[in-house]
Length: 119
Length: 111
Image 1 (spheres, rainbow over the protein chains, first blue to last red):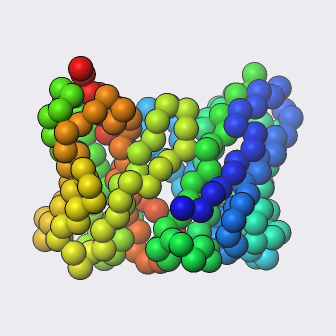
Image 2 (image 1 turned 90 degrees about the vertical axis):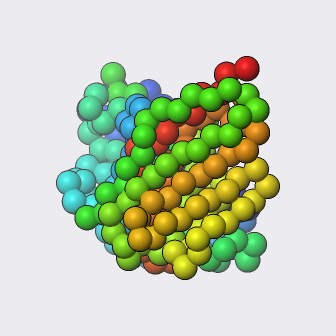
């Protein structure tokens, strides 16, 4: 299957600072990328959907000014957590779907996830 | 909105079969998936089924779909200790990858 790389895999930051997480599709063009958040022992909650070249669509309850998403190219989307606070500590996972010839066209490939800890 | 429910824990002995269940609420869900997550890692797609199918078998994995009852199950035959992980079912309405996940079932396989 296709490869989606997420970076960094873990990050610790001070409260009030901003953190950028990258999600790259390595061998296919990701027309759509999704950002999820997962709390310990809980399910994945979709935060936003981004299509290349257009503004992201945020799920209800997700602050778009706090979680900035950019999808400037077909292989890269970024999530920036602005003015992070301890309650933003979580596991963030991206997924990408697009034009991978080897995949069923409904499949979304997941990155490895980023563990964010805000202290 | 769509609600997807799973039991939280399942414990089996090595060599037994495991059955993980999932229910969903929206009958217009057309694509249904099973993902595996190991500790600290992302999600690995195990298998999927389209809503016009009743069953799909892929080596040790069997997916059963009861569309009338909105019930999906994943059977793992000859469960191994390496199968210990959290298993998520997820549903989608259309192509494009937006998924609604269940809470995940933690499978523990004892030797």
